[in-house]
Image (tube, rainbow, N blue to C red; front, side):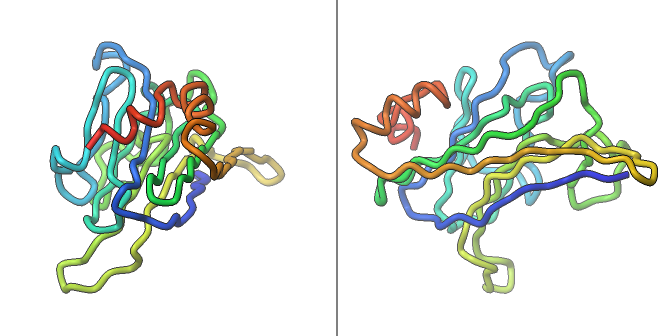
Length: 188
């Protein structure tokens, strides 16, 4: 099986907040809202789940990762750095009706194709005091595919950085992420 992961290491800052819109609805059909147990449960002061949008700290100070099922995910996510006035948007392929994504939890898998379509990772110190970064990531994955010779799968992932005054970034954020800059800044 093949799955494509696209990620980018981004520069963290104390006021960087990751924004992930999601589909609301019953967990029976859509799965849990967020998988926040990749490296242990994410504390409430680092992950806020609202109505149709979640906020995750991208400060590079606490190792954690979150993910959303393809049924919950929307084909967009982003982040805002208050210090640098940078709004980052990712847009990615999210084929309708596909739920077979590679499960990338670091454990033996009972269901290896029940993974997430969109993830975000925030780097932080390891148990031994070392650290890979600091950085944070906005990631997307393709569905898993059992390809024969000559077959292919295509996954699109686009990263766009907007830098400017908040009054100019706000309409972009509202249109694409569904929340304004002030809402993002107030999340934590």
